[in-house]
Length: 178
Image (cartoon, rainbow, N blue to C red):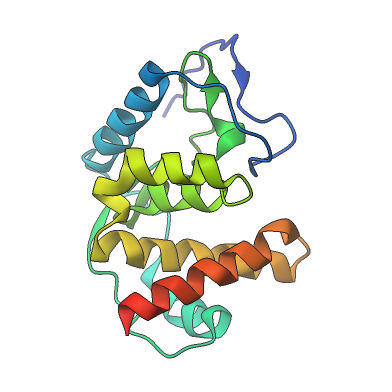
């Protein structure tokens, strides 16, 4: 097995970590490229695993605080770590591929949306550009998966700024699931 590396000269959208804290200056071509990339990645066949059903069975009820069906309704391939520090601009490049594999369908879109919640106008843009994935029952389930993971991270002291927005999104999503 070999790994191929290319030198990327564009900067990441955020330099301080995965959470977006200011509106990024990204053009139409960037957003269009992102949507296309997310769709193409989802179609790549693989046996690699990014998210396991067994984890969801344990973690979702615990971190979401509700009893719900944790069975993933659809699986697809995901980058697995799609956040603002793994995206470059002004030319779109997706970085950091070691976690790619099968995940709940919509996982990448849900993860990027969650990491955008501190910047409502960008979160809305992510929803607009990736709504064909997010605004479906499968996409809403992926959001619950991501919220589970990120709420678990807050218990370790990571991504604390996202806790309240994640809980607000959780309430919204649970109102649509039940």
